[in-house]
Amino acid sequence: MQDRTAALRTLLEAENWKAADRETQRLLVDEADIGGYKGVDADEASRIECDLLLAVDDAWTAASRGKFGFSAQNRILAKTIDAGYSTNETWRVFGRSVGWVDGSGWIEADSVDYSTTAPPGHLPWVPGIGTAVNTGRSYEGFTSFYNRYNSCKS
Image 1 (tube, rainbow, N blue to C red):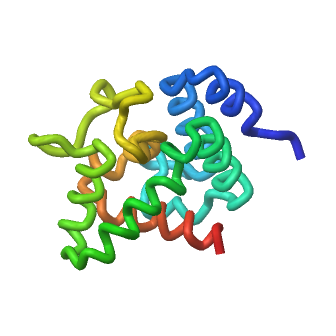
Image 2 (image 1 turned 135 degrees about the vertical axis):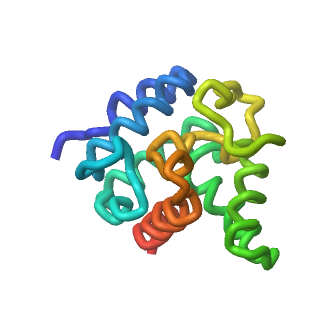
Image 3 (image 1 turned 30 degrees about the horizontal axis):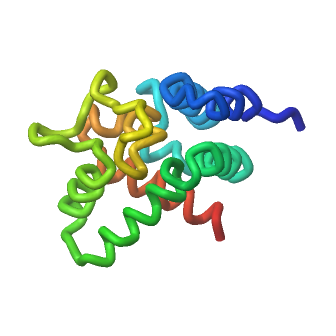
């Protein structure tokens, strides 16, 4: 099988975080999107092949020395869930922790921080992978995405 993450790894090795984020989005959307909104929504997250999802995570984790990637995000999410918030509040607290929620709500693409000073877990920008936040299904979309990630890690 051809290495679909070669371009991503090259971008990450160059610390071109913005281009790597866009390449991550392209890889996952190409893998899972079956129509409707352009992106990976709650119903499509399970379509992402584990090999691809884990390869993307490994690339981000290695390039950022553990600061970015789905593994970093998942650790932060686990701590947030363990704190016992309601479902909706869990996602808001998680979003604030990784820098995806500011004082006025979920950030837009132009507010993503592509610097090394971004908060841990800030990249890749999962809301950019899909349309969950914009369609009002953010919590369902995030739950489906991280459930898929966790099932792949098992």
